[in-house]
Length: 446
Ligand code: GAP
Image (cartoon, rainbow, N blue to C red; front, top):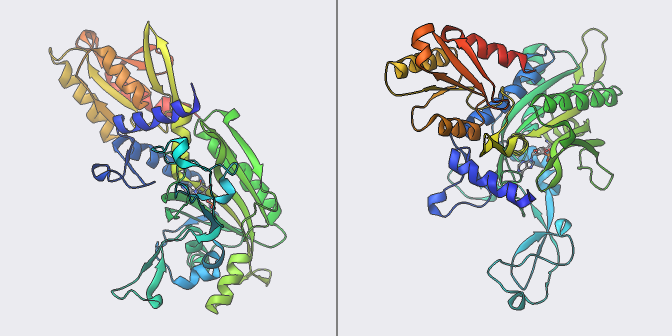
């Protein structure tokens, strides 16, 4: 399948099945922001819960926070974002479109689709100017320079300014981390590729504070740990790789940075960044706030400003990775089907329950199974509309791993069939054991 075909198919399936819609669609849409629908939000929540579970709940050295999006404007001066969070913007005088100079493959700009080559003429790029990616707004009723605030472009700073609060209230000792999931905003010059690069997005970031001198060792440990997590989401191993930043790519705060890249339908692209931020951020906040952000080791009597190893993944990019990795079209039993082959733990709905026919008490039995699953917090879906084949296809497209069918035999011996989305195998299970069977499968899926 051609690359653009896959993306078009994901956008169209996303809308049709309720994963992702264009924002404010009835008004013609808003550029580069997207809304998650009923299935999409479940997929996204599964990504976030998996991250939080592994990064916070399964460790004793990482604490969570949820900092505000609007912060003191000095935060962004200290962090370097006011001065340096810029991209070079160029405008083509012929078609008036704007581009990131460093992303133009050649001197050829794309012209407006409505323009013919003759109409566009020579691509005529003006001088590049630096464009700050932060969204500015005003706090309070007066729109003056004194009330300027920014929508945060990364969640990390909310963790740095709370470093001492978290350390003292949780009585953590170095090394320890602060994890956070939340929205970030960037006025990207060239957003695109569906939810890959948007102007409003969600990050899952963790700042790990370490003693200087141990930062390189912790960097390697976190880089390994983060790859383990990505693989645990069930994506194909060959679609993940590492890319270390050269000196020309390093962000202003980083001593070392390695991207975990995914092979998206439009090429290898960054999914997550692991950064050695040294003591840059804490020292700058000391300087700009006038407050000391030193760690005092009560045991050894050492005092130091910690170094930070950061892991920063985009939640929306992870969702796009899961959709792209899971999408397949195939022929089964003489019919073509579209499948989202999600890892069962990531699947928005775990089980769909169908009565084979809408009579003989089968709908009531099927409803009973759905209610039992829901009561145990297993997302389940009831469907009695259309042929059984159509109902299977609808669930294949939604990525539901198991379909439970209640049939004539159920009233006789209390068993139902469970059909596996990928192997198509049908297993007969006692209806009272459906919940345990699904739990066993979920636990056994790695
Ligand atoms: N605190 C460090 C930081 O923000 P980053 O590499 O700029 O580092 C981290 O961003 C991750 O956030 C990226 O790897 C990507 O997954 C996601 N991300 C960044 N900009 C994005 C955008 N415009 N749209 C969607 N996701 C984005």
